Length: 293
Ligand code: FE
Ligand code: FE
Ligand code: ZN
Image (cartoon, rainbow, N blue to C red; front, side, top):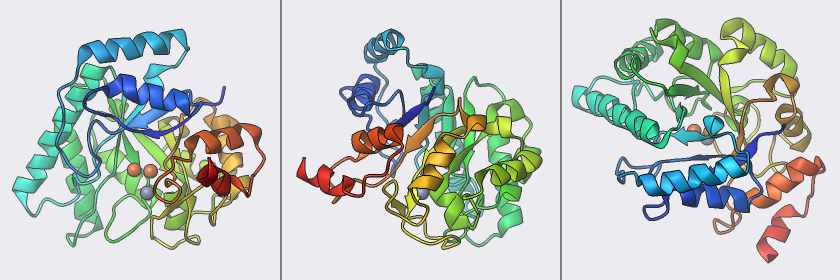
């Protein structure tokens, strides 16, 4: 069965219940959220009553909660340890984020590997692995390293870099990978021939490590290293390639999460994009329809 959803909000007053309701309003059967704002580390106390209400509804609707994803805020950076205070803050924050996931019963936490900001890719990889060795080891949550676009000094735009991090981490059982189609394309990977990409991935890392896929089109051409997401079918990757990836049978049980931009920064596109993905027919008027609705 296709597991499709999008990034949704997580608000102080409604928490997991609000996130679930937003996902259901899009026709999704899975979802991803940040436990607070993606760009800061301010976090609310988890309200167990709201969590339990959400769990009950998911049970009724046959939503597999073990596949629901939390995304760590993108400002925490494990790749640079020049400023030890900042590095330790990132480690401690991620420990508390794992505890929050455990409290919510969430099993998957997506993490950007980080940016080395000048210390070089090799040290960047070591810093990330060191950090993960302090964070993992005593958790039920799996951290999913996201493949990156290679913007600035980002680590993890090459599969070899992700493989090196995994190699250095002890608790490999709790380490996985999240693919992002926009990032893969921006990093220079040919995802038109997705099966041959998966073969390469399998050799370097192992297909069983893929626990989530972010489905995004890209505003830029292959290899652009820009990381600007576009609505499904409206960018340089295109509808056909994305549909091929979404319906690839090797990834059938992996949740597919849309992180496409709001239309005119106002209207969430997910209900429409999910319907279009289920139809498998590109609607070139989609954005206009969203605007006019
Ligand atoms: Fe991400
Ligand atoms: Fe992503
Ligand atoms: Zn991105």
